[in-house]
Length: 242
Image (cartoon, rainbow, N blue to C red; front, side, top):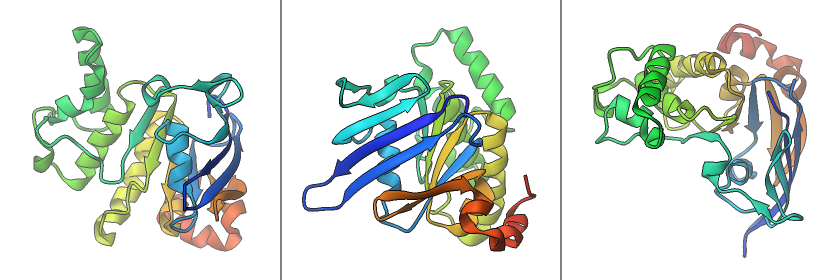
């Protein structure tokens, strides 16, 4: 990551689980970090606390020298002030907006020339040239994924968050989109945190992995270190080794 991510927070839900997260990802920690673990372990809660969509009970969330949440100092920046991109599970494209409208949705306050330049850059980066006037219903699954990713990156975020981005897809479609997503994340140049409970997705997407079990971080390391050398064959089958 261009800036190291520090997360040391506690979060509890009335009548529900309590989470205690301690995660430190240094600047050299890899472009794509996967939060991996079973359903209900707390992965999405952690992601939402980083995003500012959930407020921790106490602790610290910081990227580099910028504190996004610090209970000791009374800091709690809203999501729009954290310079984050968020890719939701089902992409959440606006059906009534064109590709161009979706990608530039968060740039309404930008000058027209700047907005048009950013749109052109992103359409080219994600091979969407010529599709700006189409609506989401007129796109393939891969094209919708790329539009959602372009929209998440339009505001030039410092960190990109993805919550189970492939889980809503059937396996035949999931396999090619898994590799395409990996390529697009690398092309974007923006560090990413990806939540998944699927081993194949984790192997295909991640440079580093943090395992989440029962509301806490159990281990952090490379994909091979975390899942073991036995994952090597599966990793190579999912995409070329890095």
